Length: 80
Image 1: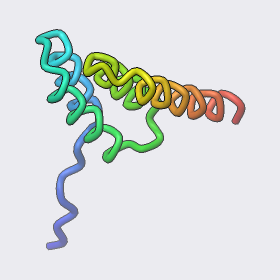
Image 2: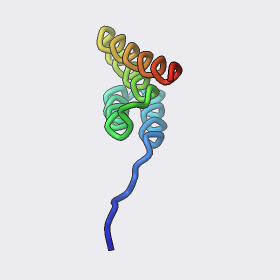
Image 3: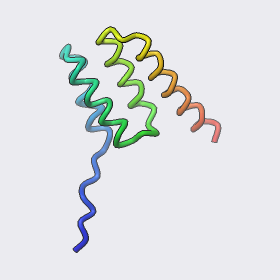
Image 4: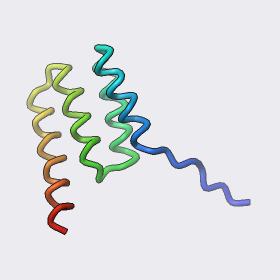
């Protein structure tokens, strides 16, 4: 048998990230947003979640950069 491992969906991290944000746990939310980016680096939603987490941590300039990256990805998808 060949073990392909398990495929983790980025939505698992997205849901938990939102839960952490609503529970005022921004550091944990950032961790899950970053994990979503590892699993799906071309998923704009992961960048937006990262931005929300960073903003909650008071890191506004980093949050703006994440929003720009997510927007750029969305634009490139819409133009294809």
